[in-house]
Length: 232
Image (tube, rainbow, N blue to C red; front, top):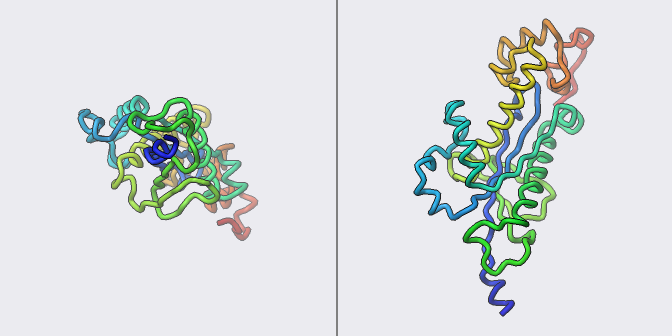
């Protein structure tokens, strides 16, 4: 009987994406998502067609789809702030955010197995998870089966859902930072190196959420203007 149950164990599909690798300030945010029900059932919902790469949705659409994904998926979110990014570099901070998102999601799955994926399973094991990461790089040092999917947020709905969660979460944080640090226009550019942002950075210098290991931020500090930049 035990062997029969083992044969019925299905993989739990998880999509992972991040937002915020490129900006000069603020956190990098990763999301790990698993559907609460079979994808064939979600396809019958009218909102399903809007589960797509977050960059292909308007801000209003992203907000609506954020609520949809939160309702119909298990979601884990990982956040790494500027101090961590400066300490370990942006790529490693992104991996840390992804690992944090997976850990958060796994805690939820331990209590609530997805419908249609719980047959014969008493406890979630490492080998029960199959992770699909947007991009061309695998997350190092994790014990789960994983696949890097280039353009994954266009090819897999579960990755697209993760892209929406990560993007909206980070954008909301940048709106809060805009209220805290109003000189930089974070609400408009979300921390990317636009002309408005660069002009403010040169005028006011970096604020506490700027990534000092990023060259434009480093060089905006007057005493660094003539220094050689050794960052990555």
